[in-house]
Length: 142
Image 1: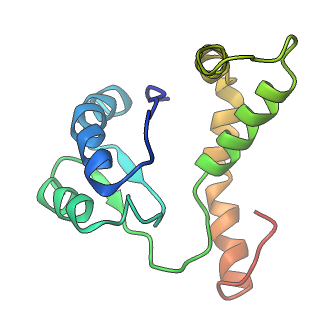
Image 2: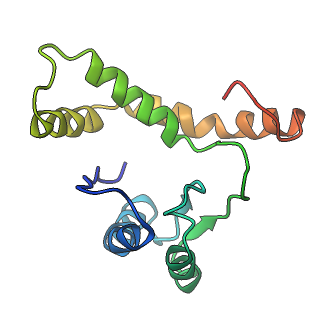
């Protein structure tokens, strides 16, 4: 898992571009000894912005970027991870009272995500893609 990054403002293409170079390369060097690990993102507007797309194209030799077709079903496992974090935050006692408390809880829960859970999500990709193909791009249980 890479670092959890706190955004103080709404994510835009320019803000995404200010984060991506600082964190993607260092994370890839941790994930893969040759630094060429796979990188997947969805098509939310800031991530698919012209500036972000241009940067990814310029750095395509630095990692393997999985292109995600526009208007395709969501298949990124980050949605599952987000749901797990939200569930963990909701079950905290006492609940977070301030934004700083919430940030602390999120960082703690992020670090405590079980490696086996994450591995299961990665291994689920083959089944997710097969399910997507079976329904010809329609809704799946994922």
